[in-house]
Image (cartoon, each protein chain N blue to C red):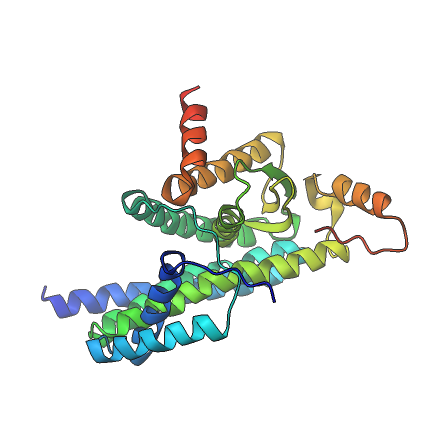
Length: 181
Length: 128
């Protein structure tokens, strides 16, 4: 088995997450329980080995909080829009499948963007082309080219937000150059 | 107004709105024409609906230790919903469970056909 050794630093987010899950499930965050949870987390990560997720090496909390709040806001607005569409348009609703090329080629960012877009009601990732990092998105109530352009811009804005939170330094500088241009 | 009635009022609003999201999902399933537009109604309102209902549970139980479990439940929902929606949508697209006349544009069709032509007829049209 070709198993790449991964550094503790790379593994740390996973371990912290596993300890959090352990504590949350026991509803007990006392030091003893957390220590035992950490032991189990290390054991699980060693025995049930998965290829490590390649993180960008940075995480900006100041950007993440407004992004999360904006995300919940968007989900709320879009939920009611879909409800309205179900009532008002129903069987006559017009959708479209739109190709959206993304900037980033990192698996993590493509996945995160796809997740965020899928979670907002009204859009759904149908297909991913990993080689060109293009998302094919089925979106409801996209009636013309303007709507499609709006959707494309929204997806790329979401990706930009995610790059600002956890993209690599290279992706971030490419983004700032693009915005400045 | 004392804080208890405030919390009760907020959780009441959350619960009713959360239940409304379930109603919306049911209505969408009935009203929308094809698989993928139904997916929008069936999977997505639950993201908000579950969030509101879990928040109402957290407000009513009034212990801090329950919040991490609720956050966990919601996060796992956030992680799994798009995957299942994507798998069903992808399978639905490939088995042509959609009405092309209700699509204003389909930018995937040409790509799929190109890939199928390149691979030849003996393989299925799966792309990487």
